[in-house]
Image (spheres, rainbow, N blue to C red):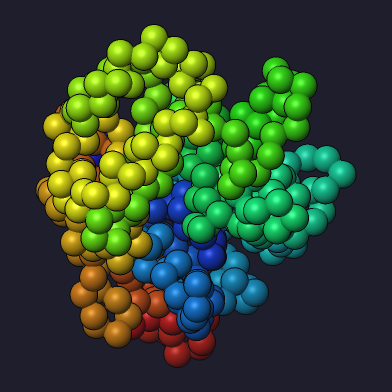
Length: 396
């Protein structure tokens, strides 16, 4: 789905002052859904463009379908341009340290006075409270929010293997934005929306808090948890590969026994219910492990697929580039990296009327759209040329 006029947010204008992951995630979701998103960057471009190591993919993943405008926000003219953008925008997104935008004269109070319909989304480390002044990172809040404890081994907390809190926090920001946008249809007025890393982490581990409240026992890390099901494990195959298999209902147990000709298990009344199977887990697992160890991965997965049981190969991120399901339709979108290399990256995990949200704009170079964005504000070509010569605007 790439025709702008068919997209849900066609006609919505977004100005984005963001970096790293949380803010750009909110921006790319809105952009993929059809909004026009202008990413405002420093003259040298967002520092995220230059990250290496585990941050090397941040810019490539979260900045498609956007326009890039590079300006000096600390200059009087750059500040005026930013205000002009906000005056015409439906939505503003920012994820800088607390009070950074206000110190630039670009806080919610200043811009709402200029544009009462503006929806101003701040993506922060913490919501209002004793910690609101702190600077946070995804990993910081995973540690203090209990997610790293639940992910790691006992006495060895470990962050999740993706920037899950940054990403989910950005998603919650979009939920707030869309709620405010719907309200604006009735009232004509915008809102200030704030999403945060710490409270997002707490929401995600809320199931474990509830588990303790229900059972009266603190939950152990997932790595050493007591399974709620007898078969919910990673198994070795004959060719050295591994497959995860879960059997999570009595109906699935009967299907499982039939698919693998486990007649003795099927006839055992003590295994007919889930609690009975969990009680005899140490009896069941060795039998299943030995059975699966005689089957090649492809044969095992084919049997599981035919039976309708939950299963998964143990993939690495690199395996997803060639995954046939993700490569169907627009599941992976073609992106050109800064060096000119071509790759494919995941689309939004949404379909509307059976269609995915595609690529309309490739990753922008720093300042690639500066001239177009300024022209849309009413600047003449000669004025833009002068701003570039004066070092207030960078344009390709």
